[in-house]
Image (cartoon, rainbow, N blue to C red; front, side, top):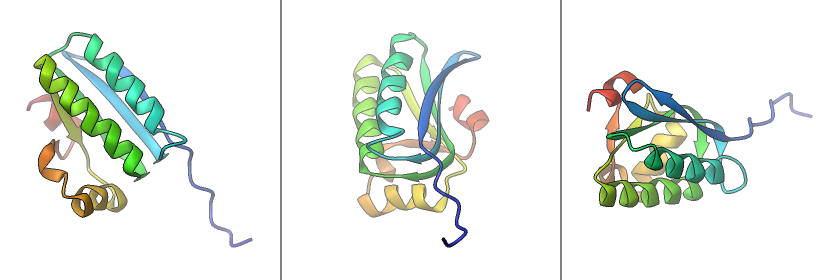
Length: 120
């Protein structure tokens, strides 16, 4: 045993914030834990009928391509509905690298905090 803590299971959930939908993603989010909940929460956020959805990734330790797929799909659905989608940090290194390596950072509106994202 190395003494290393086991990675936190990923999760995502929807919270109604003041004037926008807030989706929080926490832990290690991948195709088995976090990404399915994220896709579900983003769909529910869109159905809330607010002008903006903010995805808080500040507590996301790791995200894989399943998370990226859920975000890209949500971006397209939000765009078709005329609803803004903003990703909020600060972003952990692994999350930031996901967007950099895949060249998808420019596909999203990003903010350094939930407060900044709410004002976008």
